Length: 316
Image (cartoon, rainbow, N blue to C red; front, side, top):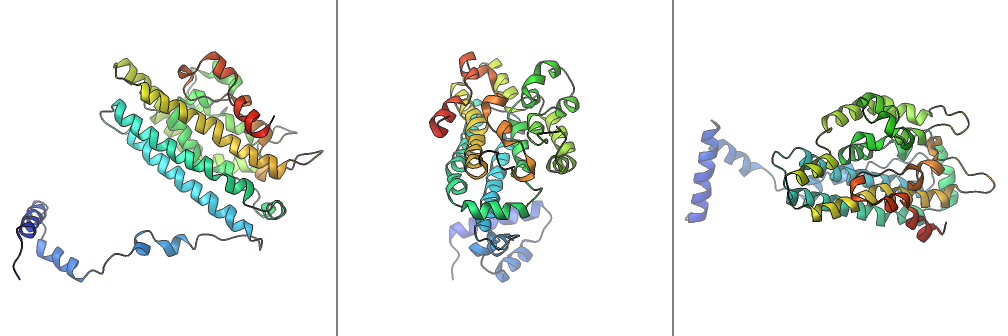
C-alpha cells in the first residue's frame, strides 16, 4: 500500500519532533500500534464519577443534594481555570480579559439558572431530615468559591463592611481576620465561631492568605484599572465585570437565600442552617454591600445593592 504525501509529511514532522527530544520514533509508533482505541467513558472516568455519590441516609432526595453540589464545584473549577489564565497572562489585553470574564459569567449564569433544582427539586420533609446527618458540613465551606472571590477583587473589598476603612492599609493577614463570610458562621447568641468555620479556617486559611498576597496587583479589579491606565478600550470589559459583580454578589447568594427561605423559614423561629451559619444576615447583599468593582457603580446603585432582586423574586 502506497503512503500518501499527507502521511509522509506527518511522519517527517514526527521524526523531527522525536529526534529533537532524543527519542526513538519507531518505539512510539509501536506503542501506538498496540494501544487500544480511546472510549468516551474512559476519557472522562465516567464509572468513577458516577460512583462518587454516597448518601448518609436512606432518603432518595439526598442524592439530588449531593450531585448538585458536586456539579457546582465542577463549575467553580471551570471558573478558576479562567481566573488563572487571566492572572498568569504575560501580556494581558482587554480582548483576552473580556473573553475570559464572559466565560465566567456564562458559568455563573448556568449555576444561577439551575439553582431551581435545589429550590423546587427536593421534598422539604426529606431535606429537613437528611440534613441533620450532614452536620457540621455546609456549602459555606466551598474553598473554591472563596478563591474566586480573591481572584475577582482587592482583598479589602472582602472585609466586613464596618471594618473596610479601618483595615484598608493593614496587611492581608489582619484583613483576613475580618472577612465578611466569617461573620456568617458565628453563633447568633454568643458570637463564637461555629465548628463549621473552625474546620474551614484550619483547612484553607493559609491558602487564602497566600492567594490574596499573590493577587495583590493581579486581581481582576487591579488588572482592569491597569488596562485603563494603559488607555486600552475597556467598555466591553467593564460591562462583563459589572455582570460578574451582580452574578457573584447578588444573584448567586440570593438564589441560596431563596432556598433557605423555603426550607428553613418556620414561624415563630427560623430553622438553623447546616453548620449553624447565620444565613439571615450572611446571604442578603443589602447587609454586606460586597462589591468587587466599586468604581463601576454609582452611589445610588451601591445604596440599592441587591434590593431590586429581593423585591422582584421574594416580594420583600
